[in-house]
Image 1 (cartoon, rainbow, N blue to C red):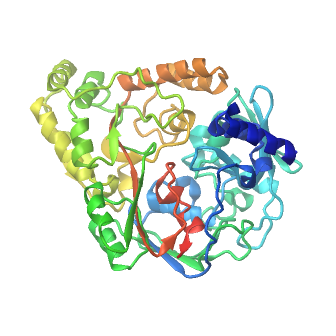
Image 2: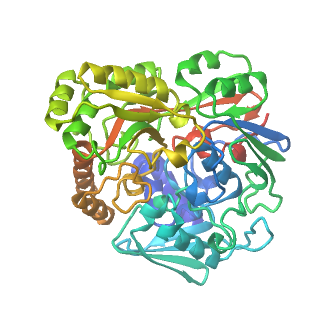
Image 3: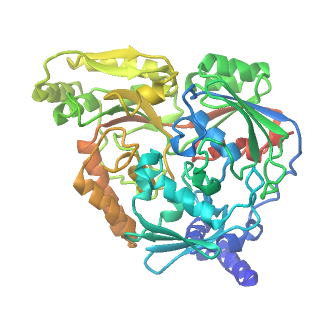
Amino acid sequence: MKDELAKLVDWIDAGGMSRRAFLGRASALGLAAALGSSLLPGQARAEEPKKGGVLKIGLGGGESTDALDPGLADGPVSFNVNRQWGDTIVNVSPSKEVEPRLAESFAPNDDSTVWTFKIRKGVKFHDGSEMTVDDVVATFKRHSDENAKSGAYGIMQGISDIKADGDNVVFTLSTGNADLPFLLADYHLVVQPKGGADNVNAGIGTGPYKVKSAEPGVRYVFEKNTDDWDTTRGHYDGVEFLVINDTTARTAALQSGQVHMINRVDPKVAKLLSRAPGVQVKSVAGPGHYVFIMHVDKAPFDNKDLRLALKYAINRQELVDKILDGYGSVGNDIPINKSYPYFDESLPQREFSIEKAAEHYKASGHDGSPIELIVADGAFPGAVDAAALFQATAKQAGIPLEIKRVPDDGYWSDVWNVKPFCASYWGGRPVQDQMYSTAYLSTADWNDTKFKNKEFDDLIVAARAETDEAKRKEIYSKVAHILWEEGGVICPMFNDFIDGVSDTVAGWLDDPNLDQMNGFASAKTWFA
């Protein structure tokens, strides 16, 4: 089979099909594992990684309420922590293709209503027990339970049955979905012993590093997993995370050598930092976006005219220029940009308009009382300054926007998804279905605008089953128009992921999925 695949790859390089297009189809057919990276042309052998040392990373976006339960990961620190000790059954590569991980291969039936994933053998959990197909099934069933409060609950709703069949896990869907492997790469879906039934916060997984100590909001220490099933990763003897929410302090820690990497570099200092000795700034555009979210089921945000007034009252280009310093692009009140395969270029760009903002505010009949917007420094880099700019332009339209600044600690547990109007951010997802299903589907636990629209829900389900590319794009266009007009999200900008890295670190690869190489920086880099 490898000979045939090698011939096929030669044909691809000769112009038969783009490599990206082929790999997408190969992944959908479960051929990715059979291909192997060694057969892909144009891939030079990388520098041989060196082993040893302790990597120290300064991370913003953590708080004392963070848990090791992967389903509850809702910030950069908890996301990166779970990447150390856990694995998902598949992953999305930097080139946006699906890679087998704890599943060694996967394939759908003819209409993509049944997907079969062959689970890798010989993988051990950190407690020494062997991972089984039953552990994988239990993991997915837990995230399908509404009581688990998992961030993956929304994307699990299209799955009607999960069962073990020998070495395989079989997913039966209510409707076909060609994107299912992308959804199952969601970072919440870390495989745990018995799905985490014994202790969901134990931090026991199959990842490259073991949890040695965890002080939420302060510090995490990891040691190398010497029984790691994947010998191509985990080059350090250990990894240490320092939670440094203050941007200035985090930047200073990198410059002083206290840490070797930092996330969430402030765009306003990124160019200056890049000129500092011994430091590199790594930035990559992707699906990440900064938002102000309104609960559409709570007054005054249950009034469509008031929502539109606020949407027209924000100067998106000003925020991109002053907050992102060019490290990003203008948003359009939907969570989708051109990094997604079915992006709708025909959706009108909502422009800043004092006149339209004032018109809709008057039509809303609002009583003129202060409209409270809650922000914290850690909501996203520059969030407080962005809110101040928003307040100033809203004032020009006669909208009484009032800013309430709160501490970072407790923000993601006490404000986000709780208070009716606040600042937030999303790292984005590889495909539209996952982004919409996680944050906008009526049943999604992380529907942080409380948006519920039956037509919208029905279209999401229809898009999953549609195999005609043109028709699928047309459906997603309708989805985008509904959210653009009716939704509670104000999306002024898409951010680049900006990390700071010491020159002592080698092996860095840009990954547009999320910051810190999609959370795999410690697994894939090494000391030069």
